[in-house]
Image (cartoon, rainbow, N blue to C red):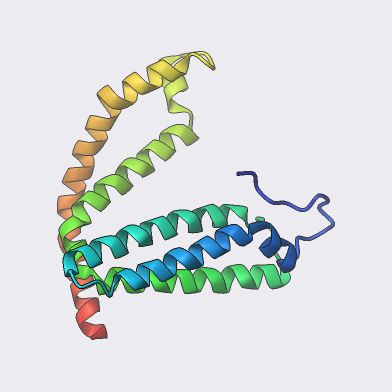
Length: 184
């Protein structure tokens, strides 16, 4: 999706224009947030927690898409809308993470591994490390990238991510447990 920017830098994007342009993403966030809350009331607790977390992840993905649509130099009401909408969304995600802390304690190592893999791959792409280290020309690096990623980089990053997750996850799990018990 292309970023919504005002046609002229002297013209600022108004809150009304932003909402009109991105109302589908905003509505989708509202719908998936409602589904996330609704699924917490299912009778089978395991499926209730699992579905709630999956719909929460879908909501986060749509939120990240909407976040890309905000102009970098948002001012006025649009800036305040971004701040308050973001704050409300982060509070909701935080609440869900704390509410399902037992489930998160179980899958926290997996989440840390995936986050670690994502951070490393973003850095590799941002600094164009494939091309720099392999001395390939633009356009020809695609097959080399796949080979390097799946045969060399992914196993190494996964191994490091697993090691790091087993170091970090007990302290994060303890923090989440204390936070949840303090809230209750």
